[in-house]
Amino acid sequence: MAVSSSVGPLYLREGGEPVFGFFHAPSRHSQRASAVLICPPYGWDEICSYRSRRDWANDLAGAGFPTLRIDLPGTGDSGGSPRDLGLLSAWSAAISSAAEHLRRISGLDRVTAIGIGLGGLLACRAVSDEAPIDELVLWAVPSRGRVLMRELSTFASLEDSAGAPVVDGDPAATPLADGYLCAGGFVMTAGTVQELERLDVAALDFPPGRARRALILDRDGISVDKRLHARLQESGISVTLASGDGYGAMMAKPHHARAPHDVFARVRSWLEEETGSTSAREATRRTAASAHPTPSSQSPIELTVGDVAIRETPFTVQQSSGNLFGILAEPAGVPASELCAVMLNAGAIRRIGPNRMWVEAARRWAALGVRTLRLDLEGIGDADGDAERFSELAELYVPQLVDQVCAALDAMQNRGVGRRFVLSGLCSGAYWSFHAARRDERVAAAFMLNPKALFWDESLEAARDLRRGLRSSSWRKLVRREVPLERIMALAREAPFALPKRALAQRLARRRGASELNDALDELRDDGKVLRFIFSGNEPLYEELERDGYTERHDRWPNVRFEFLPGQVHTLRPLASQQRAHEALDRALADMLGRTGGRWLSKASR
Image (cartoon, rainbow, N blue to C red; front, top):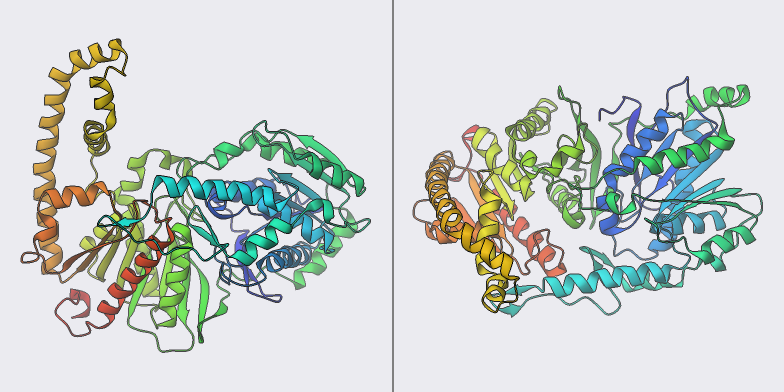
């Protein structure tokens, strides 16, 4: 989906940490009498639903509703850390400030807050603190914070049982401090957990005349919270209940998540019941509000990392298919290195990276003097393009995405940001890093975390599935007759033909792949490109590289190094995996910074 030029990034600077957001302005001919603020859910749900919330904002703006969506402090591209004190108050204050800012830039008196999960709880708290919010749309919102925390704790427990961090057979997890929670890779401090567990909508006082009405949506047929419904009604708020079918689809993994367009239409219809179009008075106010324009898309914000000042600036790369989008972190208090970094999407996860790791790393590297761009490629995060294409895994491994990485390097060089680069990415981002290093002489190094493949082949996943199946307990079940007789007979019929064909295909593919990889590694060695492979346990590509002897060929490829992380979770959700990954990336960067004039400089900088 292409985004109109009326969509722009901005920073809210009113007290506390800066809050990052996107403002979606409607056309002048269709503006309604109400503006909309979208308040996000927390953690993994926030990651999965990001593109859907973007689509929702576009939908609302297209219907005439000025719309602002934000990242809460300590999340996304906003300032702060999840370990900050007083986060609950900071989150609530951010929503209040965003609502006030939305009034100013839209020129409208009325603001509707759409809150999903935690975002809905925070919107209710903000209203009780007299935030300028006139209507509420609450989706999958409990009346008590402890309900949300119980759900997150259950999620965390399931993850722990599925992938306990292990290195060489020994537990290597850094234990969480007492009371802390890590769910979906996102850490919450004991203080924040306690604050959220105490949050209860039933205990909030809603100022008379503030929020006049509310729409509460269920969660794919799971009834709305009765206490929430009752409390809003007791407070004199007119409540409407409606279906929220599509919540689960919106919260699927980012490459499978689908925008709930029926809910978009339902909410839009509810908003239109009373808002109508702007009156002549409001049109006059909107003209006056031009004194408060949306901040420029190139407007920077200053942050402090330790005791070092850095700047972050929205960064757009124009393409024929639409714009790519990123955030550039630069040193403000120390000299900038000639070496720059670009952090690429982890699959369909937006530029903040897995578990917000790219934000933390980019800011840390900027404080060291390394300009670092975290980038969205086509169809991901806030880049233009069709997100639904990525339901086909192969779409993440097409040459056009490598072209876009190189186009981003062109844009950085043309704007005087840098001429020598390191690329970093996880999964498909690692693949793009590898191939951009092969293609572009300005790339000095590629730091690759858990690459799924270095050369994509349609048969790759099928071959791995077969190999996993042969190793799995399903064959033992077959022998023990725990599998139906019909299935045994079918396998017996298929195996004499299917297995030899698959085995032959795998052997041929391995030969082609080995030749291709050998040539690529030789080429990268001769061009002086540094490669860092950083793997979690049980990664299929590492198993294949080890099987074929690549991990021991230091004599042939001295520019290649392998490192290993605790845990067996591809997206580095265990806290120990994240900590070790940060350390590995920092070591790799320090190595590059120390190589000035050394043997492994790229051709572009010799």
